Structure formats: C-alpha cells, structure tokens
Length: 245
Image 1 (cartoon, rainbow, N blue to C red):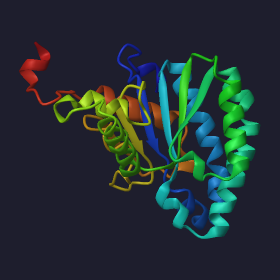
Image 2: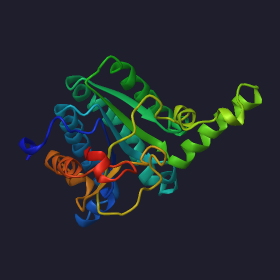
Image 3: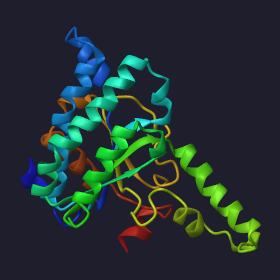
C-alpha cells in the first residue's frame, strides 16, 4: 500500500487521537492498563512510519486534562508506563532521528515523569528528521485560556492594544507555536468527536476516523489514512474551480 502513496503530497503535520485502549483490553478480558501497555507498539510503528515517509511533525494525544478524572489506579499506571516507555524507546527515537517535544500542563505530571520527559527531550534535541510531540495533561480549551492570559498580561504592561490582536498573535501564544497546523487528524476506535484536541489548530484539518482500536493500529493503517488524505480536495473556503486554477 505504501507504493501507492504520492510522496510529493504528504501532510507536513499529522496529529493522532489515540483511542480505544480500554475497549481493546476489555475485549481480551484484561485490565485497561493492559491496553495502554499494548499501545506502545502502535506509537512506535506510527512514529517510524511517519519518519520513513518524510512527515515532518507528528503529534500524539497521549493524556488529556480530563483524563485526570479517571480511576487513580489507571492514572498511576499510565504515569508509570510513560516513564518506562520514555526510557525504553529513546533508542528508537535516536535511530530514526526523531526530536521529542511535549505540550500541555506539564507541571501537573508526577516529578518522575517530568524528569524522564525532560531528559528524553534533551537527548533528542539535535535530531532533525521529524518532531514527535506528546500532548500530556493537555486540552484545547486549557491551551486557549493560557494564550488569552498571555495577551492580558501584555495589555496590563501597556504592551498591547485591542487593535493589535490578530490571529497570528493568538497562534503565537499557543503551545504549538512554531509548529505548522496539522493537515491530517487521525482518530482511532470510530468515535466521532474531537475530544478537546488542538481546537484552534484544526480549523482546516482533514479528519480521518477509523474503527481500528489504537493497539491494533499499524503502518498499513497509517498508509490508508494518508491515501484518504491524498484523495481529498482541500479548498480552504474556496470553490473547486478556484483551487484547480
């Protein structure tokens, strides 16, 4: 299937809502944490797949601000899994020349997670093949609130007038400042919602929903999503005749 892709028409930035770990585990009669553990293979596969194709940015929705409301046992297990995964997969990131970054309210993460995350980002900072961004303790509304607070702080300092505010200025106040908006957003498990992810950035993003549960998602599913993206006409408010001309 990879051979059918147009490598000259790939999205620069792919974002993924990784959904279905719990349901995958339930189908197998296992605890939810087993689904999260099994999903590490999917993260590795998709990261490698994107890097191999030449995708420049990959953003994975790993843990939302709302996820803190889940049972403590599951949350604690997820945090431990994050620490162990960062340690184990560092070699994979280095081999594929992937730079790791993170967005979200990272100060809310346990100290051990913050430490491992900081070290992994430091160790991969010189890699330039692709940037992998983990959205951790993140939500789109939280991000927009933070951006508004930055504008208010500037206004209080006399550095900003109402007439100065532009879309670009708001974008520069977001967690993703410096990263292009995603052209493709993939959501697994068949759920038809955005779940508070990159609300500003996906204004014109192509959505791809698959019934595949995240632990089963592999490179061939990534290729299917990219082929669907390449079959679409991106008009950005224009009509077909304008785009084609």
